[in-house]
Amino acid sequence: MPAISATAPGKIILFGEHAVVYNQPAIAVPISKVKARTIITANPKRKPGAVKVIAPNVGLDTYLDELPQDEPLAAAIRSVSHTLKLSTIPACDIRITSKIPIAAGMGSGAAVTISIIRALSAFLGVPFSDEQVSKLTYEIEKIHHGTPSGIDNSVIAFNKPVYYIRNQPIQTLEVPQPFTVVIGDTGIQSPTSTTVSNVRNAWRDNPTFYESIFGQIGRIVQDAQRAITGGEFKKLGLLLDKNHKQLQMLGVSSSELDHLVNVAKSAGALGAKLSGGGGGGNMITLVTSESAEQVADALQSEGAVNTIISVISSTI
Image 1: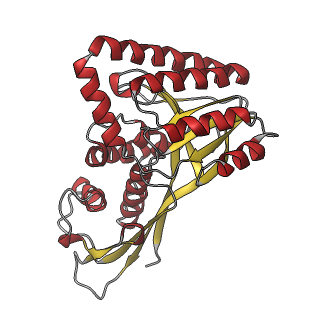
Image 2: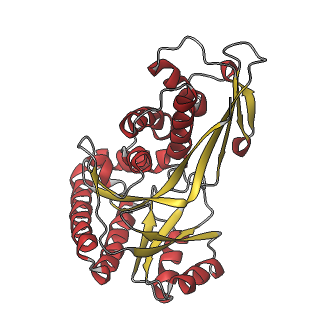
């Protein structure tokens, strides 16, 4: 039997992080320049159920039955088996790799899970639908993030720009005029679960203040949706700046993120903000196609450990 493989892209949140956890809208897009990949190879010489999990990115090389129930990679594998009501999985090697930065707001956990679920369900002869993949991934996201918004599993599973509101049907976002963004990585790992938890604790202490900010972010997202569909990119840049200020008020930015945002603006970006949980990870900036390289170079010269230039469109 030939090897079965599947990939899943990274993602970036354009607008609405943190507020999306409190039922405000958010806009996110897949970033296909970085991907997670799972390759499954049958190994009939081993007994049924002898499933080896190999994940060099996290130093894992062991058998599935040796991994705890709440280990995310093992949980993803077992979720497929449980859904298909299998008592054992045919003996195989499951090799998982990823080029998506970890704890950087690019959906690395969800992408890895999605690549596993897609590859394993295909290996077992029952490829899951996008909706099935998204729902299963959301459950695994609870291990990664505690209280996930649902946006990572949605945008990556459906592989399209989305306008997302928690517990509502997914709305794919039409992008009639493609636009270019530059993503800058601070190189500082910052687990989303930590910043989400910090914001939740602060919200509990002062719900009126934080709900006011969440509401303002929600209105920014609605304006951004109209700007994207209308091709109003100057306005979109100003909305990025406005969203970043609200995230600063939530206390989720950092000196490194603020520095890169300012560098991007000085280098000619139309707007910039942190993206994801904050505290580190990535920032994102809207640029013209002509200024993309200039902004990327400026970010790298001022501390970004990596940059990605990506064109956002309806067709990935």
